[in-house]
Image 1 (cartoon, rainbow, N blue to C red):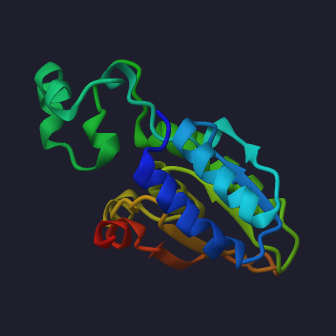
Image 2 (spheres, rainbow, N blue to C red):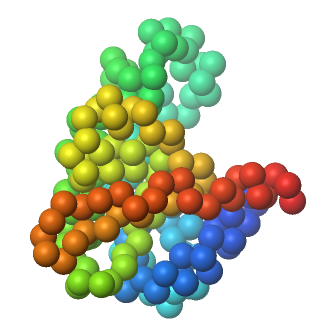
Length: 185
């Protein structure tokens, strides 16, 4: 599903802000909304987009294309779930937190490893998958990760990987409140 008018406006607004970070690499999920957002960023940064399917959002399996109400009607047990991973439990073809962690953590680790000391890289991905990626990258327990809110459209998190091989650390989470800014118009 492509970005709507609001999503395009948010992507256009965030692009110069992240370009100011002077990234040397730009990765993106290959799903439409992320890759379209990445295209705005790429234009502002003068970088090519390196698409990686491992940066995708959770696959929702047989819930694909259903509204929340339709999903609850068909899979009533999901109504009490907290977080996307729990809301997908038991749905044929849907990914669990562990499934997403197994594919996205290696992807973000490779992104970090591809950077030279002092370089900045950007990975355009999706909110629920990003929470799982950060938790895995930082070695956080699942209950800690569940305490994070899913980022709004075009918000970002920043991690720092020390050149000395020390632990990767979270520098910022939830930066860029574009949803509210766009609503204020």
